[in-house]
Image (tube, rainbow, N blue to C red; front, side, top):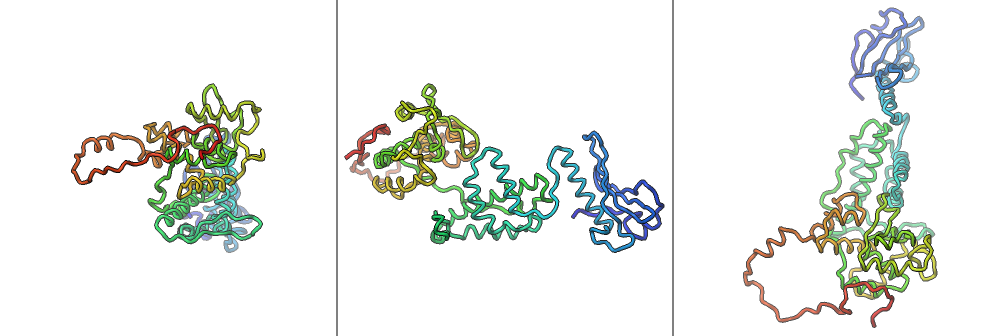
Length: 446
């Protein structure tokens, strides 16, 4: 609560008894544009708030706050002390100031984390962003532990304990809805699994802080001090990004089933996410410009993915003779690919292609970005191709792969010290047909 501004004429009962009865209140200015007043009447005194805003047509506004504690002890409802009246005046003036600026009025009454999350997700969806993964994280990690807590009672220590518990908890596994009991992986024990859990905890913390900041900006809570002090774990969000070599790309696609192979090829040729590919229709492919339109992305912003000559030929082959509204990628029975349908066929293909450890579908996206980076494509171009908001994420994952002046200078200038014996063993470059192109056919080499 802000410091109470003193006024010897009205801040005590004994002082107010000496005042003359009059219509005009005895005012105390609390801060710019806000004042609290005491009006002395025949039957007792009342508290009045006053707010001034030059941007309104009616610059001065007034509000009756309630009876003064002249005849009975203050309880904050039936009778207000000077300090209580000043606090009420400040809250009302703050709300009036927000409305004068075209913002929402301050929330009145208890406001829980659950309400804040609901308001934030509504805002998130209105922004056109995909809410699936974010809503899942909210339901799984935030609401069960913090949902019923009033934000005004949510202390820094409580958030830090929750954040730490997320990092120490085992990862949730995909669980069938009919089983009714959530499955978990083993608790993190090695350094990389602990790093991964801390990275997950940081991502969920970001969602929580974003929702609480949204509530604070909307005037639903008084301040943001409780969560502003909570810091994410350091140095946990930079794993070594796995990506496939050109040889592994060919082996993997050759090992895929006939209906799944086009999905894998498309991911390698475009860098698109699984959900983005699933949503593609024939009309999204523009053969003249050699682009694919991604209308709904993770960020909520559409983009156009540029295709290579190989990519153009691939999509032309897939879309020829099909209706504009028809989906490009379908399963063998003609049904569309759904959520998580890619996991089992990709795992089977990795096993058949002897790619270990098996890669996720997202690694195909990383492969596209990595292959661009190793060929010197500028980071802003890669960011635009992958749909990153800026180059920070792009540089985090791919900058070390780009040819650069420092690396080239060191390799050309450092002398040969003669410390390594020259081997006469020649390395076999490939075990499969020597080509770096993803054929559009469906034949698997024998």
